[in-house]
Length: 463
Image (tube, rainbow, N blue to C red; front, side, top):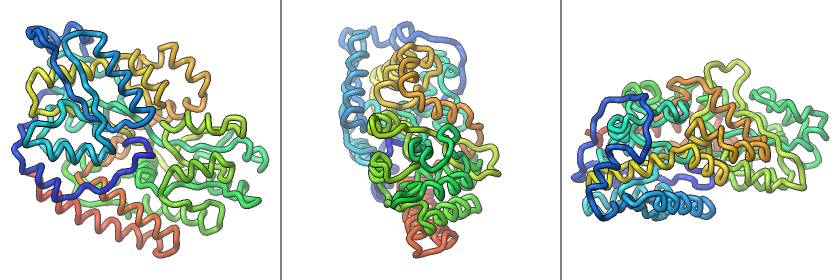
């Protein structure tokens, strides 16, 4: 998932069908898993590229704007300066949806990128497109040690034991709360709520003087996370991982329980409904109008800095029902795919850049300057990361939440080719329930029916 500020829009099925019928190359098939260590400078891929006197040019399409875009440019400049065999050019292509649609349009002309950043909910589509070379091919060829990377991040991007893309920017949601408001309400600011029941109780104590105890944006990503927190699958067929999903399960008991809890807080005015934009809930939180909110881990630095001098920010794990078991969070953000309609030299060049991005030093810098998780375990040993945790101790919550997540099909994450549309349908259902237009079960039943129909239409286009 991208950061919460970059919300997904619908990807048209007509465009999807155009790509799936276009003359794309076949995806590579390889065996999975290798545990030998490797150095990028000594890899077979790098050795092959040195046969050419001219550096290989790799075009990387990404969707990081603003300060994130500057961070991306710095990574590229550092890589290009570190060696002479590959030169990467980063090109901003707009939102994730915009970039993906441009890639579709480029497939026949081969004018597209060598490497592309795609949000996590585009994973099923990218694999079905047959337009990529799974990074597992180069993992195996280089005996690249995947065990150095975070298991709960890799799990999302693995299908049938094969890694199709390399995780890049990774986040998950946490609860942010105003410690000063907790103190004023007689609540212990060092013991934040962790369950649905505790959040509801705290919200009641915090709601006074025109201020709300909580406000959560109507964002489909949050519903997906609430399912994972309960160890519940969002789609049938093992969340679409044991076989292609054919049915949405958003209207299951886990979904109804979540939306009923949320709606009750809105109905009794202990939580405010500020709509779909996380920017709006963040602004209300920083203004001291809301005591608790949900937001991405990637927003932590901005939230803590925004509250500086006004109040102390606390963090807690994503709330879940008190009786929930075997749950956790699903990673959001995006990963990097190598396109298979480029030369072998370009694909290997893209792999060399990917390996550079996974080094502990690179990951430490990326984490500290963006707020995204390091995907490499040893990045936490870097002094830069240690100093950052001292400055922002709230981030420990996110680290612990990621590491404590139990690996199963629920926390591995749902995959379907129509995820952007599904997210919007879920947001509509939540909106209808919170505004009283429909009961939670009725709203989720309608969403599940529509999502299931869209999955069926998509599956017919995949061969």
